[in-house]
View: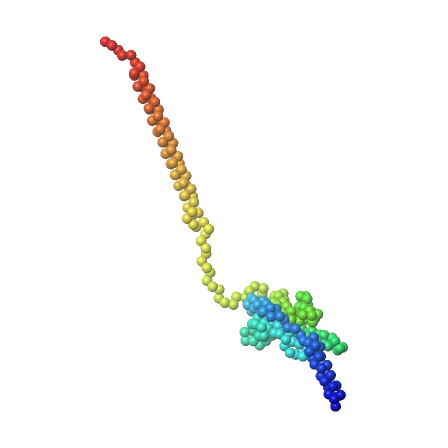
Length: 242
């Protein structure tokens, strides 16, 4: 009896160890919080410009969803969403197998979309490999790969000619702002010619005044010298006597 209990305990310990160690290597790691938030922001910009919703979904081999999100936010799917009449999504399923299994790890990546993209889905799937997003990338870093594939979709859609690269106007344009005044409309630039002319005239007037004062002083000096000479000559004349 005690021997049977010991065997059961050993087997239970082995099973528990397998659950705690071996099975953990079979779990598909999701994208980090930063990767998800950055992806949502990029997809939001693309959706606003192209009027197309973009998203991603990552599943394990058993079908459990590891991560999902879209331009609407983390854990929000674009499939059949009322705000997304046109949508595209990268859906990846990654399956890891135990080392003791003869089966190999596998990754399946597809691009789903609304009916107006039916003819583009296969081309979009095969084009992802040009960005290094092949099966090996999804097996090595499934979280990074699925978010990277999602942000690559807007570029591939433009390349396919499904949308215009220019932003889509979704609201009425605001009134055009009033034009800025011309650079030469201020007081100094607008009247620069007049001010230069007036300044020149003032300088000439000052110069004439100065020249006039100098000439007047000279004339006064000459008159004083002449007067002194006249007095000197008068006193030097002999006095006539009767």
